[in-house]
Image (tube, rainbow, N blue to C red; front, side, top):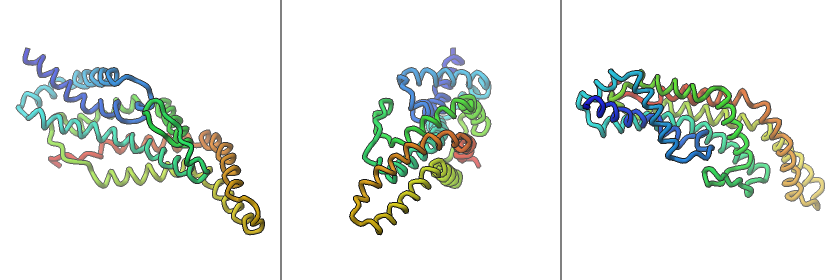
Length: 256
């Protein structure tokens, strides 16, 4: 009976490594899945993880450590994994919003029925493209491997410190740089159009340059955006790989 209680507690605690990603990180937040289903999936995955290391985890749990301390450490690890994916997809949304403002779509936001929030047009297209790449590259299997490997790198009930600021800074610089590169073609085309319209405003001052510029840049963005999505698969894949590969080193062990 005691072993059954310890197993149940271990499943609940290990689920704190899994549930934050399913509940708060893209691409899972892009799907209209009820929260209860996400929690049940997280508990099922935690059951699998505990089953693979049952003796080790139960021994650590029976050692008498505080459940609050263990839960805080597990939640920190789960939040760090979710943060990596959230930063990757958030960087894409940020870069898409910058392109929307440059092209004149800054006032036209897309209402996302899943998150109940307004999202930029270009960023929304690329976020869903990134979600498709994530599923196509076997991202869910990578997450399963990451959760399993995290139990080796940061064992259950071990003293966990805090986020690694160096790894976090490198992740931020990498994802935002690559996210900006995703929209490089669109930004270049719009910049060249801005230069051309600026010269036209000097030679034809009577022309309504503001209205003409919005129309031309909007059409140019709608033409170049599908081309950019088609050729940016490798960059999106690299962005997601960096996010997943950085996650194991994002948390510093307290005993290190």
